[in-house]
Length: 221
Image (cartoon, rainbow, N blue to C red; front, side, top):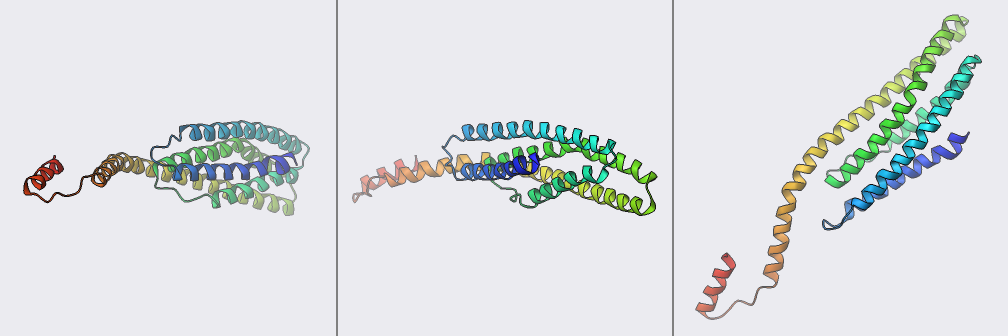
Protein backbone atom coordinates (compact mmCIF):
# COMPACT_ATOMS: atom_id res chain seq x y z
CA UNK A 1 0.00 0.00 0.00
CA UNK A 2 2.82 2.40 0.87
CA UNK A 3 4.38 1.94 -2.57
CA UNK A 4 1.08 2.28 -4.43
CA UNK A 5 -0.17 5.30 -2.49
CA UNK A 6 3.06 7.16 -1.74
CA UNK A 7 5.93 6.03 -3.97
CA UNK A 8 4.24 5.38 -7.32
CA UNK A 9 2.66 8.87 -7.56
CA UNK A 10 6.11 10.32 -6.90
CA UNK A 11 7.43 8.37 -9.88
CA UNK A 12 4.96 10.15 -12.15
CA UNK A 13 5.81 13.52 -10.60
CA UNK A 14 9.51 12.83 -11.07
CA UNK A 15 8.86 12.06 -14.72
CA UNK A 16 7.06 15.39 -15.02
CA UNK A 17 9.96 17.20 -13.32
CA UNK A 18 12.44 15.58 -15.70
CA UNK A 19 10.27 16.57 -18.65
CA UNK A 20 10.04 20.18 -17.46
CA UNK A 21 13.79 20.26 -16.85
CA UNK A 22 14.48 18.97 -20.34
CA UNK A 23 12.13 21.61 -21.73
CA UNK A 24 13.94 24.39 -19.86
CA UNK A 25 17.30 23.15 -21.07
CA UNK A 26 15.99 22.96 -24.63
CA UNK A 27 14.57 26.48 -24.55
CA UNK A 28 17.58 28.06 -22.84
CA UNK A 29 19.68 30.39 -24.94
CA UNK A 30 23.12 29.23 -25.95
CA UNK A 31 24.68 31.71 -23.51
CA UNK A 32 22.52 30.54 -20.61
CA UNK A 33 24.26 28.48 -17.95
CA UNK A 34 22.18 25.34 -17.40
CA UNK A 35 24.73 23.51 -15.26
CA UNK A 36 22.87 24.44 -12.07
CA UNK A 37 19.63 23.02 -13.46
CA UNK A 38 21.39 19.88 -14.67
CA UNK A 39 22.95 19.45 -11.22
CA UNK A 40 19.57 19.85 -9.51
CA UNK A 41 18.00 17.26 -11.81
CA UNK A 42 20.83 14.80 -11.18
CA UNK A 43 20.54 15.33 -7.42
CA UNK A 44 16.77 14.78 -7.26
CA UNK A 45 17.10 11.69 -9.47
CA UNK A 46 19.87 10.34 -7.22
CA UNK A 47 17.73 10.88 -4.10
CA UNK A 48 14.80 9.18 -5.80
CA UNK A 49 17.04 6.28 -6.75
CA UNK A 50 18.15 5.88 -3.12
CA UNK A 51 14.54 5.94 -1.90
CA UNK A 52 13.37 3.50 -4.53
CA UNK A 53 16.22 1.11 -3.73
CA UNK A 54 15.21 1.02 -0.06
CA UNK A 55 11.55 0.51 -0.99
CA UNK A 56 12.48 -2.28 -3.40
CA UNK A 57 14.56 -4.00 -0.73
CA UNK A 58 11.70 -3.80 1.75
CA UNK A 59 9.20 -5.17 -0.78
CA UNK A 60 11.58 -8.01 -1.61
CA UNK A 61 11.76 -8.92 2.08
CA UNK A 62 7.97 -8.89 2.39
CA UNK A 63 7.51 -10.94 -0.78
CA UNK A 64 10.06 -13.48 0.40
CA UNK A 65 8.16 -13.76 3.69
CA UNK A 66 4.93 -14.36 1.76
CA UNK A 67 6.59 -17.08 -0.30
CA UNK A 68 7.81 -18.81 2.84
CA UNK A 69 4.19 -18.80 4.03
CA UNK A 70 3.14 -20.46 0.76
CA UNK A 71 1.36 -17.36 -0.58
CA UNK A 72 2.80 -17.19 -4.10
CA UNK A 73 -0.13 -15.22 -5.54
CA UNK A 74 0.11 -12.55 -2.83
CA UNK A 75 3.82 -12.17 -3.54
CA UNK A 76 3.34 -12.06 -7.32
CA UNK A 77 0.58 -9.43 -7.41
CA UNK A 78 2.67 -6.39 -6.33
CA UNK A 79 5.36 -7.26 -8.88
CA UNK A 80 2.83 -7.52 -11.69
CA UNK A 81 1.43 -4.14 -10.65
CA UNK A 82 4.92 -2.64 -10.73
CA UNK A 83 5.54 -4.19 -14.15
CA UNK A 84 2.37 -2.55 -15.50
CA UNK A 85 3.38 0.86 -14.12
CA UNK A 86 6.90 0.54 -15.55
CA UNK A 87 5.61 -0.57 -18.95
CA UNK A 88 3.40 2.54 -19.00
CA UNK A 89 6.36 4.70 -17.97
CA UNK A 90 8.46 3.37 -20.85
CA UNK A 91 5.60 3.75 -23.32
CA UNK A 92 5.21 7.42 -22.35
CA UNK A 93 8.89 8.35 -22.67
CA UNK A 94 9.54 11.23 -25.05
CA UNK A 95 11.39 10.41 -28.28
CA UNK A 96 15.17 10.97 -28.12
CA UNK A 97 16.05 14.60 -28.74
CA UNK A 98 18.57 15.72 -31.34
CA UNK A 99 19.70 18.58 -29.10
CA UNK A 100 22.92 17.89 -27.22
CA UNK A 101 21.87 19.32 -23.83
CA UNK A 102 18.47 17.63 -23.90
CA UNK A 103 19.74 14.19 -24.90
CA UNK A 104 22.26 14.42 -22.06
CA UNK A 105 19.36 14.91 -19.64
CA UNK A 106 17.45 12.04 -21.26
CA UNK A 107 20.43 9.74 -20.72
CA UNK A 108 20.43 10.59 -17.01
CA UNK A 109 16.72 9.83 -16.89
CA UNK A 110 17.31 6.52 -18.66
CA UNK A 111 20.03 5.59 -16.20
CA UNK A 112 17.52 6.16 -13.42
CA UNK A 113 15.09 3.77 -15.11
CA UNK A 114 17.83 1.18 -15.47
CA UNK A 115 18.55 1.41 -11.75
CA UNK A 116 14.86 0.80 -11.05
CA UNK A 117 15.06 -2.36 -13.14
CA UNK A 118 18.29 -3.45 -11.46
CA UNK A 119 16.69 -3.01 -8.03
CA UNK A 120 13.83 -5.34 -8.99
CA UNK A 121 15.95 -8.10 -10.49
CA UNK A 122 16.42 -9.91 -7.17
CA UNK A 123 12.64 -9.98 -6.61
CA UNK A 124 11.97 -11.29 -10.12
CA UNK A 125 14.62 -14.00 -9.77
CA UNK A 126 13.28 -15.02 -6.36
CA UNK A 127 9.67 -15.28 -7.55
CA UNK A 128 10.65 -17.26 -10.62
CA UNK A 129 12.71 -19.71 -8.55
CA UNK A 130 10.14 -20.11 -5.78
CA UNK A 131 7.26 -20.21 -8.25
CA UNK A 132 8.96 -23.02 -10.17
CA UNK A 133 9.52 -24.95 -6.95
CA UNK A 134 5.89 -24.49 -5.86
CA UNK A 135 4.60 -25.50 -9.31
CA UNK A 136 6.46 -28.80 -9.17
CA UNK A 137 4.61 -29.92 -6.07
CA UNK A 138 1.23 -28.36 -6.91
CA UNK A 139 -1.88 -30.03 -8.29
CA UNK A 140 -2.16 -30.08 -12.08
CA UNK A 141 -4.58 -27.14 -12.31
CA UNK A 142 -2.53 -24.97 -9.98
CA UNK A 143 0.67 -26.05 -11.68
CA UNK A 144 -0.59 -24.94 -15.08
CA UNK A 145 -1.77 -21.64 -13.66
CA UNK A 146 1.54 -20.91 -11.91
CA UNK A 147 3.56 -22.00 -14.96
CA UNK A 148 1.54 -19.66 -17.17
CA UNK A 149 2.06 -16.79 -14.73
CA UNK A 150 5.81 -17.42 -14.60
CA UNK A 151 6.02 -17.50 -18.39
CA UNK A 152 4.10 -14.22 -18.58
CA UNK A 153 6.37 -12.70 -15.95
CA UNK A 154 9.48 -13.80 -17.82
CA UNK A 155 8.16 -12.40 -21.11
CA UNK A 156 7.22 -9.02 -19.67
CA UNK A 157 10.42 -8.71 -17.64
CA UNK A 158 12.59 -9.59 -20.65
CA UNK A 159 10.63 -7.09 -22.74
CA UNK A 160 11.29 -4.30 -20.24
CA UNK A 161 15.01 -5.05 -20.14
CA UNK A 162 15.18 -5.20 -23.94
CA UNK A 163 13.37 -1.88 -24.43
CA UNK A 164 15.47 -0.14 -21.77
CA UNK A 165 18.73 -1.40 -23.29
CA UNK A 166 17.65 -0.41 -26.80
CA UNK A 167 16.72 3.12 -25.71
CA UNK A 168 19.97 3.52 -23.78
CA UNK A 169 21.98 2.57 -26.87
CA UNK A 170 19.88 4.83 -29.08
CA UNK A 171 20.42 7.79 -26.74
CA UNK A 172 24.16 7.16 -26.52
CA UNK A 173 24.44 6.95 -30.32
CA UNK A 174 22.47 10.18 -30.73
CA UNK A 175 24.58 11.88 -28.06
CA UNK A 176 27.74 11.29 -30.09
CA UNK A 177 26.18 12.81 -33.21
CA UNK A 178 24.53 15.66 -31.27
CA UNK A 179 27.85 16.55 -29.64
CA UNK A 180 29.62 16.58 -32.99
CA UNK A 181 26.91 18.80 -34.46
CA UNK A 182 26.95 21.07 -31.42
CA UNK A 183 30.73 21.52 -31.55
CA UNK A 184 30.63 22.17 -35.30
CA UNK A 185 27.58 24.41 -35.43
CA UNK A 186 28.28 26.60 -32.38
CA UNK A 187 31.36 28.39 -33.84
CA UNK A 188 29.46 28.98 -37.08
CA UNK A 189 26.51 30.37 -35.14
CA UNK A 190 28.81 32.66 -33.16
CA UNK A 191 30.44 33.91 -36.36
CA UNK A 192 27.08 34.59 -37.98
CA UNK A 193 25.89 36.53 -34.93
CA UNK A 194 29.01 38.69 -34.85
CA UNK A 195 28.85 39.29 -38.62
CA UNK A 196 25.15 40.17 -38.55
CA UNK A 197 25.77 42.64 -35.75
CA UNK A 198 28.73 44.12 -37.60
CA UNK A 199 26.70 44.57 -40.78
CA UNK A 200 23.80 46.09 -38.88
CA UNK A 201 26.13 48.68 -37.38
CA UNK A 202 27.94 49.49 -40.63
CA UNK A 203 27.99 53.12 -41.73
CA UNK A 204 25.85 54.09 -44.74
CA UNK A 205 27.35 53.48 -48.17
CA UNK A 206 29.27 56.52 -49.35
CA UNK A 207 28.61 58.46 -52.52
CA UNK A 208 32.22 59.25 -53.47
CA UNK A 209 34.41 56.74 -55.25
CA UNK A 210 37.26 57.03 -52.72
CA UNK A 211 34.86 56.60 -49.81
CA UNK A 212 33.21 53.58 -51.42
CA UNK A 213 36.59 51.99 -52.11
CA UNK A 214 37.61 52.56 -48.52
CA UNK A 215 34.42 50.89 -47.28
CA UNK A 216 34.98 47.91 -49.61
CA UNK A 217 38.49 47.47 -48.24
CA UNK A 218 37.25 47.54 -44.65
CA UNK A 219 34.43 45.14 -45.49
CA UNK A 220 36.85 42.59 -46.97
CA UNK A 221 39.20 42.84 -43.98
